[in-house]
Structures are given as structure tokens and as C-alpha cells.
Image (cartoon, rainbow, N blue to C red; front, top):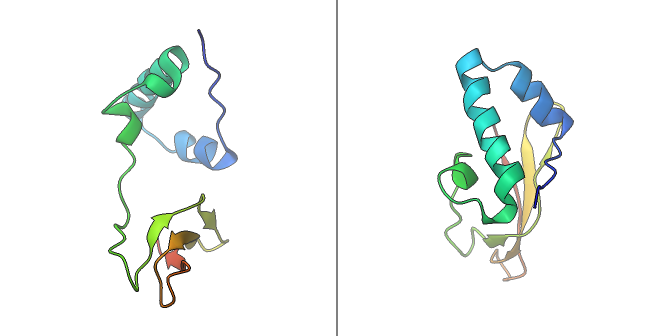
Length: 95
């Protein structure tokens, strides 16, 4: 079964800035993703760097949704639990 890979505007902008060698590497991974879909394994599925590892209260547990980026590039997100009262947190990361 062939899978369809959709890219965001942010991805397209990032992709345009890559070198030829980086394009080749990304294209290879996207081709594999189109072929194998969710069953694609490492290293292709986890090549995005970890920006932060949550440590639990009061830090938060289980980031629960995608990140939102503001106009200055700062990232915002939420966790499903942890925080001062155990009900989750809102966090920000600077790029």
C-alpha cells in the first residue's frame, strides 16, 4: 500500500533552505515513509532532535498535542498531567 505524505508550509520553507545533500537524505526518508507508512522504523522516524525531556512535577508529564509557534519562533505546547496541581502544564520553548 502506498501512503500519502503531506507537508506543512513550515516544512516546505525549511526544506527550501537545505543543501543538496540534505535534500537527498530527506527525500530518501520521505520515499520510505510513502512506501511503509506508520511501520517505518528507526532511524527515519526519530530523526527530529529532542528539544526537552519532561521530568514530572512540577515540570509536567505527557506532552499531549502539537506545538504552536508564534511569529518570533517561540514554541508553545501543553502536557496532560504534572504541574503544580497535577492537571498539566502550558510550556514554551525558545528555538
